[in-house]
Image (tube, rainbow, N blue to C red; front, side):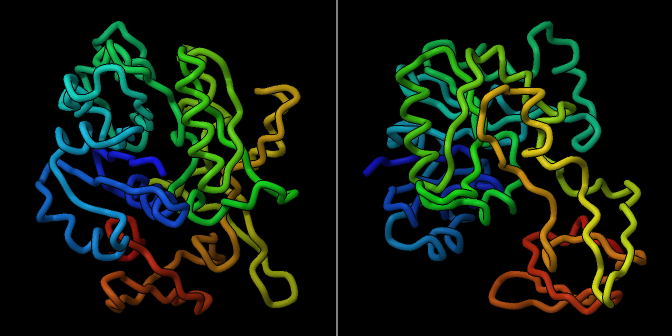
Length: 287
């Protein structure tokens, strides 16, 4: 099977690595802090995973996934990625990430920055339009009627074919939007972008109760409701809104009680009693 190198092993990277390992791929993980900080993640992923430096991960991967903060894109090693297929998951969203003057002063559009840095690699934009929690749960077998599709964009047809094969192996169809320039169609601020979690100071949508149970208030339109305006004729239904019991909105401002469980943090909502596991606490309201 394919060996996939990861430059960056945060929420999206670790989620994709889990799906890749489950699909039979080998993964080589890296981050900016060193392989020793990835021991727990490697142990969780199992024998098909190992930790390395970014240069080693870039050299080892048949496909390489770059999933780091976009402000650090110039730190991606170039020489070991020469001639390789690189999956670009980077987004620039000033509303959530804060403004980066260097990026805003650059005449190159943010969605093309990695291509300008990796001039001798085959860059394909993928996995940038879906929230990592949805990525972990929406995968389906190839013949499933409710299988989701994710948009990809790139200038090299063979490279896009390899990325589409990876998508298929982890449970998703690929919708080819066209050349890499067209990845602007699913960049932050477009309807195609996933309905991400609210920002720390964003107002949470209200819900009403029906039959004693909260009725879901989706964070934005569902992709299968809006894709005809963006990609006519496609079957894209990915990136759905919150599901009951996992990040759903609440009638009142939620407060969370915290307990550490198996290396993750489990939260119990004081409003409705539902339990949720979260990898981070920085955005849990009440802390």
